[in-house]
Image 1 (tube, rainbow, N blue to C red):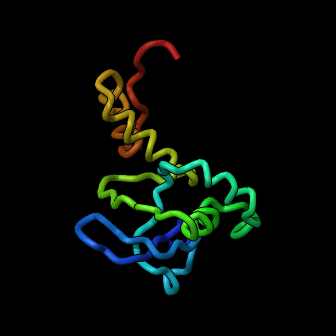
Image 2: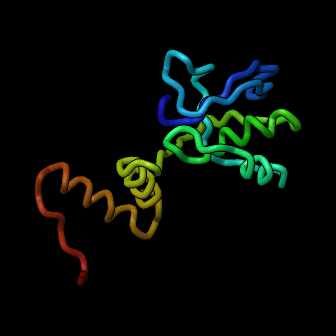
Length: 132
């Protein structure tokens, strides 16, 4: 939780949250929920004025979450509860996991990537395919 923006509010029906708070990188004890902001937005142009007025926050960076809190004062924000897989591409392991996930699901290279993973896991050199 301390690596993500977390939302809080009340579910008005399945998957629909009436948002009343956003917290940037809270401690697990102070988080308003376990619902993280997955960094996908459709925003109105008003967010740019909010960003201009937002002081640096956590990590001495201007946080979009802080600007969204300001935007909530004048506009309703409607979150969408996403139940699929997400990747934290801000960390090296998350970035690699995202790329592996995409690669193994590609018809043209998925089998070769899985062979590489199997070879690495078994501690052996993978079979060479073509010139490098």
